[in-house]
Image (tube, rainbow over all chains, first blue to last red; front, side, top):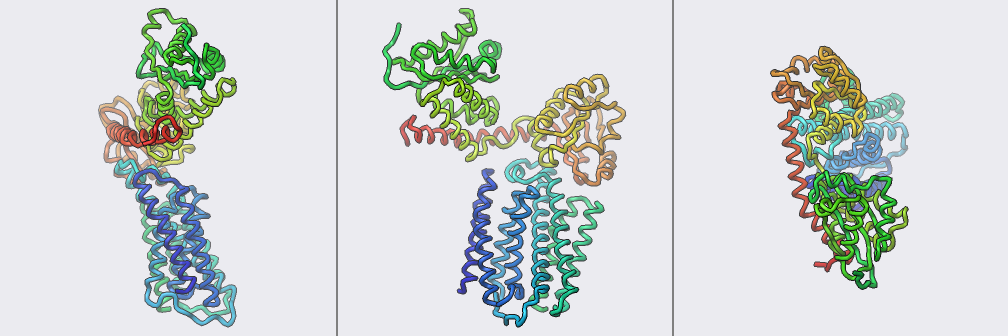
Length: 260
Length: 348
């Protein structure tokens, strides 16, 4: 197994370590944020190493195959978790992010023709690399909005049904979660807008379907953002939109990387 | 009669608390905060005594000391005599003074339980930890502690933290007031939370005071008797509005505590729907502690509205108490382990 895959396996193990004891501790009510940080940090370090080694192998930023894209999104999710979690005081984000990141890694491994070799680029166009990286980090922000949406829906359910205990005490106030969803969608939109703006400057042609899907995802989240901003729907409905909406970028990535 | 002295100082604790002694006696022998430094000096100056710490709260008065009496009973008697003298208790009062007298491992176990909140009226409460710390600090500053009590109290703080970290003894709410606070904290940022009391009953005052003590932003009181509303608002640093104005102000508040004596629902779904429209879906917590209820239960079906009546609050508080009681065995086990670790008892 190539060294990048070995590191990726270690990263997956670290994220699973973050999930299993944390879920157990959460259910028993003896959870502390500090227990989450170390395995998440270790996982992030292994992930970064894996992406670096993979980049060395394929002689470019590894974002061409679906496996590579999934790993890059997983990396971005963890990066944003470290940046956004404390800022939005959503410390529990890690416990919900770790399963998603683990699932993305496992999916990247089990996909047919996972981590294929592709010919190195003759000339690296920095605009292409920045455009693609920004788009994938934007998708990671949407993934975190999806996770925060799930947290909102859980807390909302606990409050409505008077189920006070366990996870209820660990989750942040729903008002804060609603705001975090809005900010994450906005962050994703800004990043994706920047990525699409760069696409106008590209000298290297990018196959059309990728751009079309990126615009479609931008359109979807622009509508979600507008709905949130104008308070057209209730926070619960927007949380559903954020949670379910992530399916679209996910499918679009699969389509463009396998059929694009 | 003087007894023979021992080479090593012996640990002793004399105390009385809400279980052993009624409040009329407790308040008689309580040490005012300013008098504690003087009291610790007095305890240490008792014949044969070397160190002293005085813990005096509304629920307990405890003296921790080390002594060199060969017979611990003599040390206990000296401490009881001190209390009687200090508070000038009449012979019948002195006779009615029921205290617990603990030595060595028993005294350490007791202190560990106290600091962990296991001996408190509200099981698992955390305020006592700070109170013990303050009592120890006062003794430290007065220079009445030395090696034995310094070590014991440091160990007690370690045990208290361990019990809090390794169990959920302090989690959950055990009273209606604290349930209200927990709920408000999970709906809003409490510091920005505006609260309205509709009806100025005792229970709503308790809930509002709990919210304020935990940092709620502001309180508005509305009551049929406007004078009563003004009085209560002044007491809590809030504002009062007339009873015919509260409906118009509902959209401005984040928590409503209703406790009127109206025989019918005064907060109905139509009203709350309009309020939510004006609030642009900002969540609203409604606590209905009136019997008969003030709030139509269908209000809970409205998006973003969370309604809790008195039964729901009581059920949560009962569950909180049960959960804490379930943790008790685990806490006691931790304390026993720590007693063994620190050499007070033989390890299992």
